[in-house]
Amino acid sequence: MDTEQSNQRAADVEKAAASSQLTQLATDKAPTTGGHDVDPMANRVEDGVEYQSMTWWQAGMVMVAETISLGILSLPQAMSTVGAVPGLILLLFFGAFASYSGLVIGQFKLQHPHVHSMGCAGQVLFGKWGGIVIGCAQFLFYIFVMGSHILTFAICMNTITGHGACTIVWMMLGTALSLVCTLPRTLKHLSYFSMASFVSIIGAVMVTMVAVGISKPAMQAAKLSGGGGDGALSFRLWPSDDVTFVQGFLAVSNIVFAYAGHPAFFTFISELKNPRDFPKALAFLQISDISMYVIAAIVIYYFAGDSVASPALNSAKPVVAKVAWGVAIPTIIVAGVVNGHVGVKYLYVRCLRDRDDDLMHQKTWRSRAIWIGMATLSWLAAWFIAEVVPVFNDMLGITSALFASWFTFGLSGIFWFSMNFERREIWYHVRSRGSWSWKKTILLLVNLVLIAMACILCVVGLYASISSIKEHGATKKPFSCSA
Image (cartoon, rainbow, N blue to C red; front, side):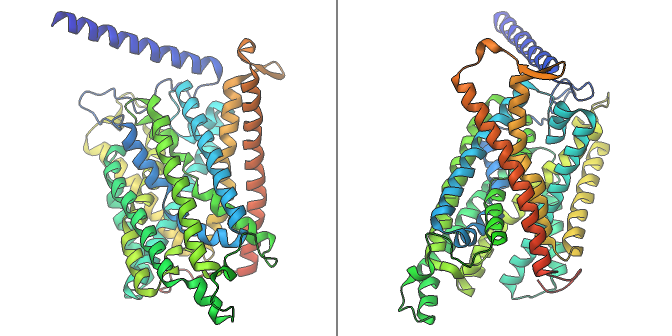
């Protein structure tokens, strides 16, 4: 027994020493975040909240729930805009780069254990104000994503009930359900909801694919247009001549948005039992989303053709569409909840991590009240914006262009450069010149591509979204009972 205790003490000492070395490495290579040198999720209170409790597969489930939801429903229409071949290439291209950029985030987190959010990472890269700007951008992005899920829930209920109640009522109900599900303070609790979300989105997509495969809307459209019933008339390998630049790039933006789960990755890693297991969770996510995106986009577009709707669930016949929407309810709620949880967690950690009493880990009424208050205000803000902004969907496109492009691709490229280069006087130099190889040269080019992609997606996506607002104007009135 004494030998076992001695071995355990030795293991604890070794673990603490390794953590200290990682922290020292982080502080040597970049400025720290206001003196924070440890992961804020690490428990320092006896019998406190255990945030670092997820296994890799639980983290993978949460990541799938956060990423694969609304995005997949717009991909068939995006493919109908750009054509099947370019659409498939774009799905695989952005999927591959999203996989690599996620891996870089995991490496950056291991080198900087104190980083808990994109805001923390921004402070490591750009100092105090850089952290504030990027943190605010991350939180604003989540508010719009939360609002999007509230609005989608209202559309879902209107479809199922045939507008059985005012849209405002459905949006308030969606907000209330989301708030209740956000109340647990640990992501491990959400991992159980995420399993239901995973089954839900697979079920909804399967129902839609089977339904359009049986009804063949593309063939029906071809018959009505005098095409003799050949469904291929409305299934194009390449974009049609009348597709405008704005339409094409908005379709590309929808594909990018489908992979935009990266802003939450730092938070997910912080709540893993072993942060080094993150690549397993990332592989689970990327294999799941790339395969589902490709299959759903091609199959639904092939059978629905140019008449494919967005969300794709509406491509099925009315009765089947109601069934598909009903199956999709868990993923609509849970995906919004995961995003909302990460947004609230950013505020919670930022406000409480410096306290000597480690309030954020306590199981007291005060710590719970702060969490509930922040969650309530965040969901009310998301509901209010979704209700008031008449061009909410286009505003979501603007926030995606401004933020998702950088969170998913650009910042990861900058993370890689910060880990491999250091500033000396007025120029940057390789941190360890002796370890440079041809592989590092390839990675340098890959990360330059990531940054260039973010610049292009940000600037051109912003232009396309603003042009869409000018073209279509307001799509709904504030506090309207119509969908």
